[in-house]
Length: 300
Image (cartoon, rainbow, N blue to C red; front, side, top):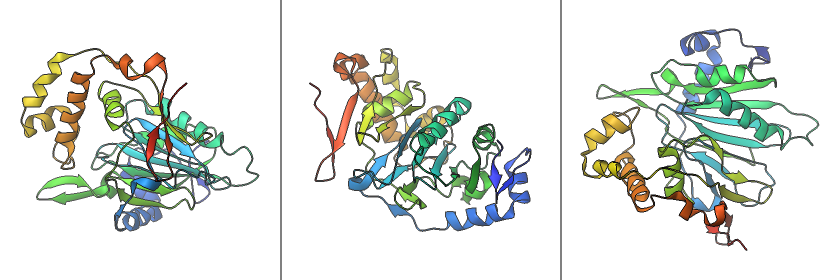
């Protein structure tokens, strides 16, 4: 079933320029969204999603109020919500396997919405700049479920030129799982297990679900990477070199990008064998404490 806009099917499109030209209200909505004040999300209510990760839950969740993700330059941040159940999924998609990733997101929401007697699936796309691709839109177009496109703040609608350099207006978003509100956001905290999750992505890990809503636990599944001492080279490289070779958008990265890359490389050098991080091949599990922190769950 193709995507719907204002309850009408979207026809075949070749670019975001054509999309915004045909559906001008999406363009106006994008302007309004990108002009919203940036919200700094506190850790005690947050479920943070890294690149090539997704998470889904419902308003009944006592451990999470906001799902969020940041540092999206050429990536798309995707929010899919069922208006009847309130089930909400947020994903950070980098275009590496969009066609196989989108069905995972749809299933994550529909599987939490079986009890809902009414409602519809609503889609919000944010991120990317300049690039005129339609990879996220096209993948959702191929799903069997009816999906209503509500927000489309991508490509040129998320682009600003500063000192001749194109940058995203919105780098990160949050979604309030109680109300469904989607908003521009920043995140001082990106855990738990930020280093191992970043290492998984850096070494080519595919899209993975990081939250078990039935147990209200963050779940970091076992992953593997090959030992590679050669990456130590990057620790001595200057910022410009790292940006040119390790970024898809070297002139648009946030200020902490280089330090984050070096932190991940140091982690990989300190842990050449990922098996040691997952005793007995078990996932890393974290639950929310009464103080609002994610705490490691001890396995029997």
